[in-house]
Length: 369
Image 1 (tube, helix red, strand yellow):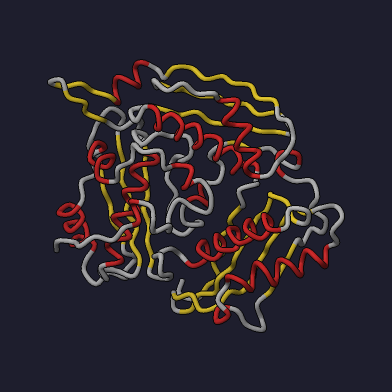
Image 2 (cartoon, one colour):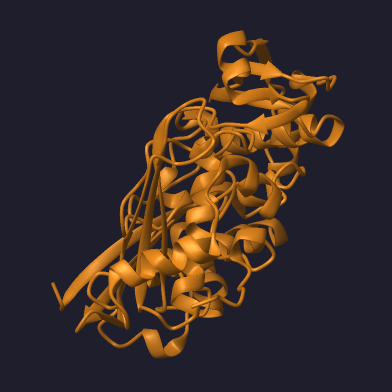
């Protein structure tokens, strides 16, 4: 398709799924801060005032799971007194031994699971992200900023959605914007709509992307007083489309939050994004997708694929040759080259894991052709 409308959505930090993602990544960062070699996969589920923290951990770190979870809720802006149940066991010895191989006295890191991962980049925005998810995240981030400035009016839970019109495969205008935000019971719908239109939408969406035919739906369901875990349940890892490319391109087999970098679901997806972004940044294609696949216990991938969607200035075979010349997908190298054993993962939880120039997999390098 050359002419079409593509839609992506984002959610705020107060969405119950994102609450659970932030609990999981806060636990991971706390472990890595004390023990950079921690192997972690500790997740969370929330409903009403109940939180379940569960999973596997192999770490020397001393972690207060209950306090971390409760601190996350307070930080986001939920004041309730939550009850926390913790069910965390040590990681399976079989998995741990397969991932951490000692050969000749040195640590050799292998993939923590089998799986497929995708990295994507497009020259539609300066961050080399697809336009629909880029604008959806802009709105969610701004909505969170505005609600923190008026906590008696707007509340933490919210969602955004942007439909972008493409002509000849290029984004030209925004057709529809949907924003739903939790709010105080003392605020009427018209006031909420005015705040969102003026302080959220108009504040961050470029005027040239809007026109007289752009449609706006702000709290289209009407009242949205009950939100967060009292309006819905939440679980770690349920927002992988929001976390990646908004449905543009393919989606890998696993989520990111909670997983330490030996889990290639996370680290190899970051690396694949880095590869794809650098190919686009070098002007080798307008958009690129990189797929990589691993087997548990093996350090190198079993396959790498690149697709430029017929936008390449060189062939896909040449792009793969450039990838092999400049990048090394071995698990240990990914951890070292992107410096992934640091406690950086809370910063990735909200508003997408890609596009923030401060993250190591977003930096641009010079490629050897």
